[in-house]
Image (cartoon, rainbow, N blue to C red; front, side):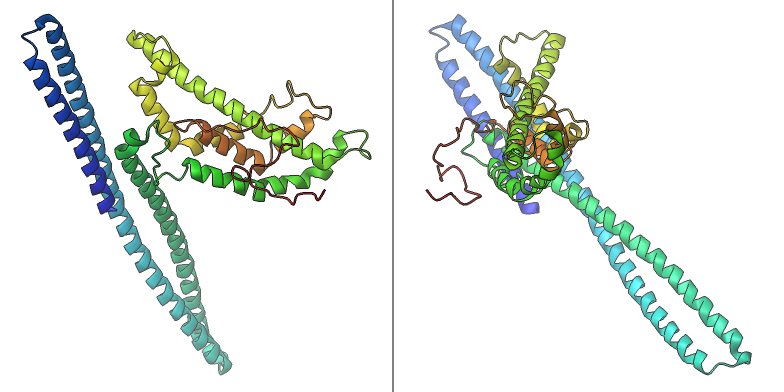
Length: 374
């Protein structure tokens, strides 16, 4: 972990050095040509000086954020080591008490066999000790569980800090360049593609068990292919989920960018100008870190998918079927995947222009069922 952090700091330092050298070279060239075109070169010099100052401030801000995250990470690692030590001590005490409990139970059993009326006091004493040990065992077991929960929480925080620290160094390198992959990102495009394969194997297949549930939504249930109806509704729900997530993601950035521009009186004439605002870039980065929270919010509040049957040219479309499927794990997984796709940079797109009967390109698609023999 320390080696990875040091590498991240080294990358940040190299980028700063590169900016300094570039600014110095530009300043030297500018000063040499001042005598020929003094007014124009003076303007360029001031512009370069301002850009150099801006680059220096960005580099200083990046270094401060990296230092802060490293300090927080070290603090979490110390807490993690402390809880691990406490956990080991509690486990040792638990095992010791468990051994004593077994020994006391054995002594109690052995002594009870030869007990008479005069030995009732001794039996009661052993029973009290046994009860005390059981209470103590329960207490330690509870403490063990509590420590395990704390350790699990610290591990999650530790992983999150590692991911954020790594992304600070690599964000500018990978931004807008799909040929460079951040291997520390668990939601990179390749991983999202793998999750789509798992979607069919798991949630899609489980949703097919709803066939009997949707029959009550149709009058002529004897002459309909309910498997085809269910498949088309699942497909429709996936497409709508993607389009609504895409619209919502664009709306978020537009709203934040316009509010910022109006507040600071900035001149933005296009959506590209809005996306290039530093605050919008920071929001896009933070949104990728917190994608799980927002995807859960969309699912729990049923914000996505309500327009699935609108403008759908299908004779057997049913709002009841859509409502039923929106309560399944399949729909929850669709929201999570689609939201991860639309907040990538660049955006991932869903290929939905394939017509029925089109030959399958095995370089792009995977066959999940056997092909019918002609």
